[in-house]
Image (cartoon, rainbow over all chains, first blue to last red; front, side, top):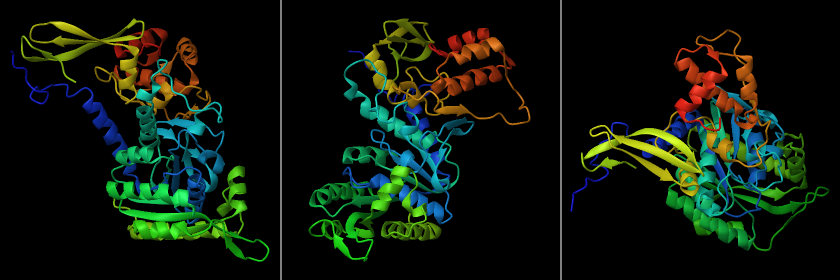
Amino acid sequence: MRKIRTYHEVESQTGDLLVDQIRGQRQRLESRLAGIRSLIAVGSGKGGVGKSLVTANLAAALAGEGCSVGALDADLNGPSLARMLGASGERLVDGAEGVVPAPAACGVRVMSMELLQNDADAPLRWRAPSGDGFLWQSSIETGAVREFLSDVAWGELDFLLMDLPPGTDKMDRIFQLLPGLGTLLLVTTPSEMSRRVVARAARLAREQGIPQVGLVANMTEYVCPCCGHSDPLFPGDGVTRLAGATGLEIWSRIPFDPRLGEGSDRGVPAVIAGGDSPGARAFRALAGRLADLGRTGKEDGR
Amino acid sequence: MKFLCIQCDHIMAFAERQLPGDGTLAAVFECSACGRDIAMLTNPMETQLVSSMGIEIGGRTVPEQPMELVRGNLEGARQDAFVEEEPPAPVRPGRVEWTPDAVDRLGRVPSFVRGMVKRIYTDYARERGIDRMTPEVMDTARSDLGLEGM
């Protein structure tokens, strides 16, 4: 039998045709992220807990603190950040340095699949030979998130907030795309179902070695707008149990506040709508905490 | 992926890419020692598997363009999603003038990818010292760069 040399024994003057391209993608990503002081992912693992609402209001609140902020909607199949930040219908500029993100509320720069689709209510579809889409769909969607990061001219940012899709599998893929991710906010509600799913996401974050992970407890209570009396929305306190079981700190408790939802629907986050609602106050406090950490450079290991 | 000429124990180099039809992609590799060439043929499914990673079989003929994976694969794209950046006031050195015929031809490219395509053609002309973009230059660029469909 003829002895054939191994892949690595064979030297190629043109390099490796595939590996070099992947390495190039990685370098472009790192180069783009070098201009971003703090990258914060907002995830949960669970759907419907308010990740996008947290991302939009936090982005607006940080911008209100005088920070330069970008918001990246990594939830390709359920994009909502552009709408929540009042950037629906905005056009993207094909600039020399990349695609210029859309201007949104409070000067936040936003990138979302919603800005690229003709029908915002249509399910996301990729052009491909018919059938067997499951083979490449996750690959192409991870690639799309990579392009949102590396091919968008984010410029110099204090914060880039990334709204993650539901599902710990998708979170895992994005974490692998971002080895330098410094901060993760895990959004949860006090419900038992949410607690269990978010516990998985917390374990994933620990396995990935993300240095700063904080819990954001959403819809913890209802505050009466007339008398200020508050009552819990869920029986028990799953958030405290989650914090105890995972060893994570609760960075914020966001009360149920109809004005948060109204603001998101109108594209004007409640934190900049001028109101002083309990929800808006909670977001401003969380933004202040992150901004302080950003100033001292402690929230991000990059 | 590497192709080895077993007779010569020599790495084969990428020579050209063709789309011969029925969704086949042909990447031709050549042994510089003995001149033997081979064609690697992929079917649409295999091509899609690789391109879903943002990778071109046989290597890149032009640098990766901003968001080309999304722009090239998204169904139901919003055609007015992108606008071209206003050119800077002073004329840049190496400026490429587009003739009306070339502009007309470019106008037939879907606007979702038009800016990206225009940049590829402009860079092609600038790198070769061509200062007028004509349909003929576009044809040559398309052939040289393997940009069938643009």
